[in-house]
Length: 238
Picture 1 (tube, rainbow, N blue to C red):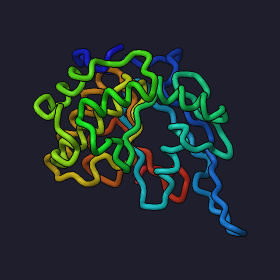
Picture 2 (tube, rainbow, N blue to C red):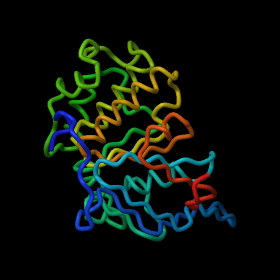
Picture 3 (cartoon, helix red, strand yellow):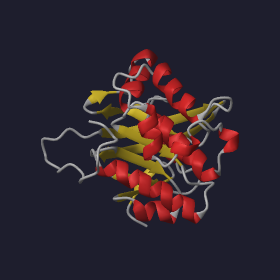
């Protein structure tokens, strides 16, 4: 399936459909000397293809730790993560890296753009580094995000909104099944934030499963579902 096809509607749900992302009873401990911090306390999360889910909560609630475990960048101390029915957690780093390359797009707080490369070069490099098995056409992807006239610009030549969209292009370079984003609109004004959220909604409409960690009320309002995380635990809606 191409993320560049014309949006229709999200896939119909069904009990026999494999979830795009399934995390079960995740625990994560951090130790510093004799001190131990329990960052995740039995967190479970299931996201269907075409679903846009926001993980909300105060700073220090475990949102970034959860995303790292969902991406296979960090290993949970307990529980499991499956992507499209295949286990991601508790695998060797090469296997987790391959799973990320094939199925997961990342848009984290630190920029995923190289400053000395143009937007197009950043997208193509991401495809090469991750060994894209089904890469999308870079020019078509960049144009679909409204960056056709900025394809040959470097990051320091882009506005904040353009930088956010260029980062999204890199995250979508390999046509992932799941997009994980950590505060993707945190530095944007309200107008630009709305534009980025519209782009995410368009991607969800053609089957991309999206999980965004965010404090923003606008991001929460755009989502299909909000999961509240407090002190490493999922809590009832606030």
